[in-house]
Image (cartoon, rainbow, N blue to C red; front, side, top):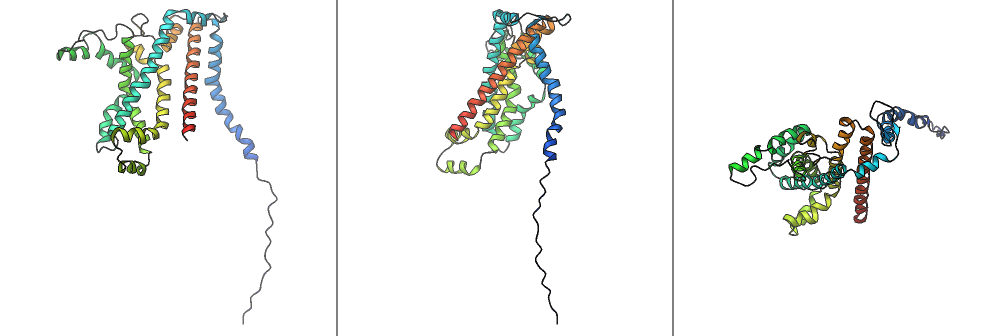
Length: 308
C-alpha cells in the first residue's frame, strides 16, 4: 500500500530587486562616437561655411569680416539672378517630366507578363553617372550631332539647331537629358508602390465597372500618394543640387545662360577664388533646399491627416 505525501505549496516570493537600468543609462554613451563623427564631418564645416560667407576670403590670407556684403552682391548680380531662375526651371522640370514619365511607365507595365523586361531599358541609364549622361547627350545635342542628323535624315525642321547655344532652351534640353536617366528609377519606386496596394479592393472596383483612367484616378492614385511624396521630394532636392550634367554639357554657358546656383557656387569658390561669395551662395542654396523640403513634407503630411 502506497501513500502520497502532500507537500505544502511553495510560496514564491516576489522579487524585490529593481530592474537593472544600467544599460539604459549607458545607452547614450554608445551614441557619442557616431554623434562626434557627424559633428566633425557635417556641423563643423557648416558652421565654418556660415562664418566664411560673412567675410572676404581668397583661401590663402585670413578671412576679413565684411558683414552682409556677399549677400548683397549675390542678389544684385544679374548672373546670379539668372542662375536662380535656371535653378527654379530645374526644380519645375524635374518635378514634372521624370515623375510623370516614371509613373506612366510603372502603370503601363505593372501586371504585364513582360513588365520587368519592358522597364529594364528605362532603368539602365540610372546605372551610369551624371558625367556620362552629360557626355552622351552632349554628342546628341551638339551642332550636327545625332539629333540633328536624325532630323535631317527624315527631312524634319531643326536639323541645324544649336540646342545648347542659348538659354533657356539649353536648360530645358539638359532637363530632358536628366529625365532620360531618372525616369527609370522613378518607375521602379512607383512599381513598389503598386505592389503594396491590396488586390481585393481593386478587384471589387473592377467588378463595379471601374477600368482604365477611372480605375487609376479613383483607386490607384490615392494609394500611390505616399510613394509619390517620396519621389517628388527626392526630385526637388536633386534638382536644387544639379551640377555635373550642366558642367559637362555647357559649363554654365554660353556666358552664364545655363548656370545653376550649384555651378555658380563652384565657379566663385574654385575658379575665381572668392570663397566668401561661394560660401554665401552655398548657404543660401542649403537654406532653400531645407525650406523647400520642410514645406513640401508639411503640406503632404497635413493633407494625409485630413484624408485619414
